[in-house]
Image (cartoon, rainbow, N blue to C red; front, side, top):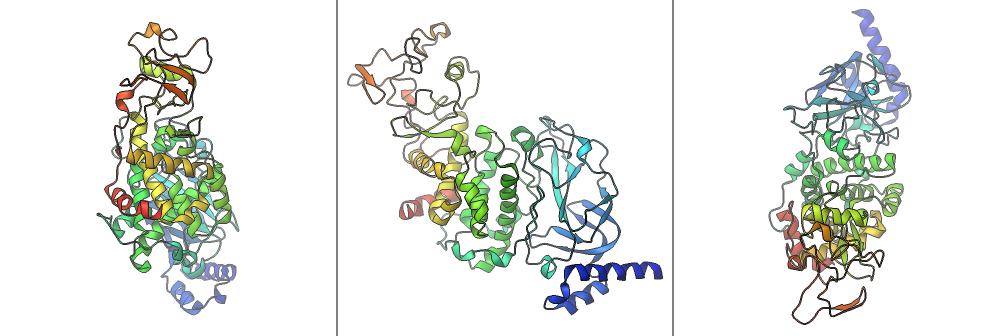
Length: 506
């Protein structure tokens, strides 16, 4: 017993020396708390996940409620639920690229049990590390997506954090870079203060929606599989209503102390997003499945005045809009669709094969079957994100420069008009697959151009063609102007904010 007490005192004194805690105001109280065991523990538990240590160490929580443990080093002897080689895996400082050690049987697999460290795990000296633990999906989904029920992160610090972490954001769970940002450094003065309209989500709802670790750092199918059931939706378009709505909710005129609990959780998720992007130097592909990743990163980089992140985001060319929105060759309308081969486009139109998101290879109308599939799924996410960037213009300094005008033009067109399908000089599919390249489809005599609609009065160029009066030709003229301001994940709160404020701040 005496030897154990001596060991505890030695550990405490060593940590105090490392941390320089005596230089902070109120250090006597901190030392007293530690001596009576208030901040000492040999284990910590969050969301049913427990980390066990070889002895008692100082422990505490960051501003968002996630645990830290201080020691130089710390030894973890067990993490429950136990990893059995297949289920309930864990990693230290997960990386964006490559395989993962979290859970076997996930959709897309890519599981590598060798990425799970052996126990006992001894942390490196003089370094901050993130120990990320997951629990197997419950219930287990039929297709293995998502395969994680919940994830939690324990941060190991080599010294006590300032103010015992109460005013500190948890460092990002990904990668090796582990900055400690103060909540008090947030540029809350940059947030708008707008009168509420519609039916805004409560501050408590936003706080709760972003309070659990959003494990979201891998590529499309694998990353979707690893998104925890209790933290977020596995299908990213479903997350955009909370992401966009959350950002807009923080722009209402509540006193900042009322908004702060939600703001802390939202920015914490944003810190993880920013450093996922910086660590991977891109965003994992996923096409129509991956809209809505810019807002949390942009808002976080802005409020933390993170110049590196702002510059990185401004130069980014990998977000959803960069790959799915483009201007007509003549500089006209902004159209929707993913760049793919001309043959792939017609394969989908004629046989329903290939991607449903392929852009019109001739640049006249929206891609795929206009207004269908992923265009319908993702269009509302662009409306919400450009609304946030309009109401808080400083966000545009942390926004992909190329995307900004495209998203604005597209969202305005979608809200006011809907699908764009005319004017279009291309002959429509006539129902006979054998006529591809004969009566419709790619023009064999004019590479890169379609076979023209036989009803045209004349065709001189992409911008100079016409049909006879009363004739509306092209591939999908009946869809033009349909689905105005529609979308699968339309958010009523975003809609109310748009209707009230967009034109005023435009």
